Image (cartoon, rainbow, N blue to C red; front, side, top):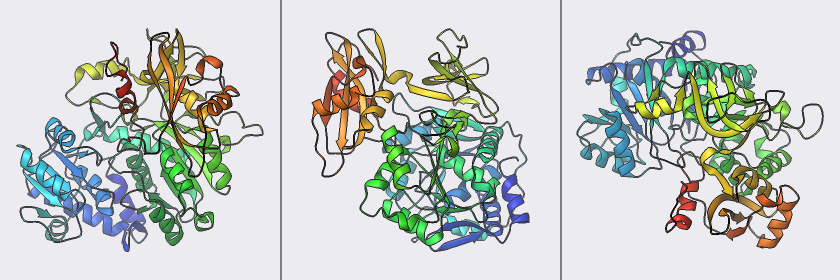
Amino acid sequence: MIFTQAIERNAQVNGKRTATIFGDRRRTWSDVAERIARLANALQQKGINPGDRVAILALNSDRYLEYYYAVVWAGAVMVPLNVRWSIKENQYALEDSGAVALFVDDTFLEMGVELTALSNKISYSIYMGEQQTPEGMLSYEALVNEYHAIEPYLRSDDEMIGIFYTGGTTGFPKGVMLSGNNVWSSAMGVMADFGIYSRQSPNVLVAAPMFHGAAGALCWSSVIGSVTLDIVPAFDVKKVIETIEKDKVTDTLLVPTMISMLMTDPAFDTSKLSSLKQIIYGASPMPEGTLLEAMEKMPNVEFMQAYGQTELSPVCSILSPKHHVLEGENAGKIRSAGRANFTVTVAIKDANGKTLAANEIGEICAKGPNVMMGYWNNPEQTASAIKDGWLYTGDAGYIDEDGFIFLVDRVKDMIISGGENIFSAEVESAVSLHPAVQEVAVVGIPSAEWGESVHAIIRLKEGQSCDDSKVIEFCREHIAGYKLPRSIEFREQPFPMTGANKIQKNALREPYWENADRKIN
């Protein structure tokens, strides 16, 4: 009940306030609550039982937000599918979760039809697009219009409400099980830190993919705060700028690659961003050069970092705007991931589970009510990830004397060269400071002499030129000699990305390790 309660409250307290904007379509909280309750009834009438899994494969929309809540309202479990995955990958998620119904939009209609045909568990698909409903599918709007509103299904807050498949850069997808209490506690912690909810007329732009926990968390906390959600189908620089200007957007969440794309696009115009008060970033490491450039180009916008992962529902820590400074008493923390969220306890542990002292590097671990229930149908992986209530994040880092968390790398992305541990994120940050560099990824590649060597793959800004020696000499001013790239590759084509816009380092590494005796992925 805790997840859907916010919808009921909003209808009662802020019923006439705008809840969602999608293109030219606007709906109030009363409208949204009514539609959710009707859709939930339709799902029940069409055979969805408590605990059944209901999947979705779609771009962002106001209907996607209604899907979140209608599925839980009906007593079922949401399963958002990754819009960048292949048919085979999403077929795996459907079969693994045992989903019995699938929501699909115009963009993924063809894939949805094929997935439904391939599945022996999907009973029907629901078309949530804007055209005529295809034969053999149920119409989203018809279901909303044909059934009356019902009360939310009565369930324990510790019951599962969602399975979110990790679209990580390494390893096979795992279904992260989240309860209502998991999501609620993370959202409440976010609300305590974010400045959104104290604004006079907050309008939050949702441009990150809604299948991902980062965008989900933004939506869920905004619903609790009765904030208007301005939703665009996908990140597009021109569309984002137009929406911010037209609707007077105050806040948004962008991943670092989106911020980089925003600043380098010809459509970038700060005069059209005058309403924007805050950019929240997260989901992947922010190169220092990108952040400093963004702060310089958008001086009237505050920046806030949210660090976490799906397994933490998803927020672990927050770096507030007041620490995004280079001078003064709050300086020196800009490279950190902030301090633990209000509902989280964080510790650094070694390989034996011992808690380390300040400034000692180990694995970042977290505990609290936001820690996932576990991995769906995967007790071994669950036992490996959660030990004595602590979630082992797979991220390497340390905590300073002031409680600020500093990430140094993914544990699996650490490069061991000549016996020295080199963190790719640190090298990437140094390279990113070079004025000609737009984007960089650092990986370990085979070395007969050192075991592994540091290899940097660089995309230059348009019209810029550079060579290996200049980049290496530049980095020498920022990092130790043994951390410097030993080889550099310049490329024009975009990096391979996950659906959450994280660079797929395993794909970048793979060609170098194909014929090696030992592979790092």
